[in-house]
View (cartoon, rainbow, N blue to C red):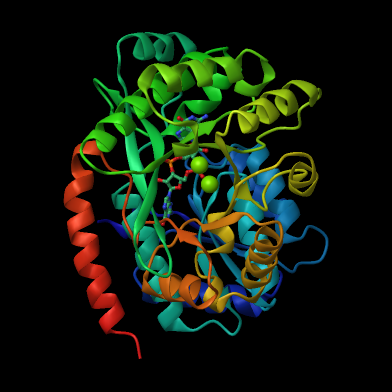
Length: 404
Ligand code: C2E
Ligand code: MG
Ligand code: MG
């Protein structure tokens, strides 16, 4: 990999820092390095250069234009490169800045604390070389027509991710997660097509296909002696039609699955102008004994109002407050508050995004009810579930033997 394909811009108001970083980068073999001591001059590079920089080392704290304002202007120049933050600010400020920049779809490789350590710079620059060598598969924007055809052609497939009881490790259910088996692009994940379905009136058809597949699968597991609660994600758009409750009830009864064994996970993805239809649909589903779950809790616009108005059975704490919460005070505080709230309201609380042993130990210590995440099991085709259960049972024995 040729390091000269990485065109670096260092932006810092401190001329000593510019010299130091320039020197360190040259020492690491990076030959294309531009330095600027103010945002306005740096932006010039993006309007004048044929090959503008594709990696920026950015100081957050600068007089005149600060780092955050610089990023906003950078987005206007359609910047698609990566970024490394250089700052003396504390962790929380850095993390907030990182989130904000990532929301602009710019990849932040990490941050360098001042004074800058050569070892850390080396690590981040290696990451940068790696990113350039293996660019992320670009997001393909699919058209509504392509999606429509895919739904009709049966290209959508359900995967299932286990939900386990934290104290015993027993599997209590699965969450249905849809994938698009694209004939050319391979497996396409829902973040690339759910929005399109919602925006182009295809979400009812999509949900119908996913729900019917999940119901048939639930029946098959039941017949094989496996009693699992099967969860399906429901979009707010589905709830805007009062006919949805009857559709779900009809489909469950046709498949021979009891409403108690079906969980409907609802995320409040956008502000609903008219709350009456969703309230009516959810209330009727609840009266029919379907289980309701509030998904991605903590990220919605009015999660607390929803808890007051709708009798949810289950609360899923969003992954961002679970993963790494054992060493992140802010995430931990939100996790604790959500767990207590759910328990006080008599709900089953699920921790999402349990990714490693530390996360798993954390949800056990804090006595969450259920857990879901890559550490336990990734979403998988239904056929893989029996094999996974065997492996998980063996791992559970091991995990329990490891306890002090
Ligand atoms: P969600 O309902 O919150 O689902 C959990 C997502 O987190 C899934 O992503 C799952 O693969 C991922 N995940 C689970 N454990 C871990 C972990 O330990 N670490 C990490 N980093 N991620 C984990 P997926 O399958 O890409 O789905 C994304 C979202 O798309 C879902 O979020 C859900 O909101 C939506 N979605 C999926 N299927 C459907 C569907 O049939 N209908 C609707 N309306 N939305 C769906
Ligand atoms: Mg979900
Ligand atoms: Mg979620």
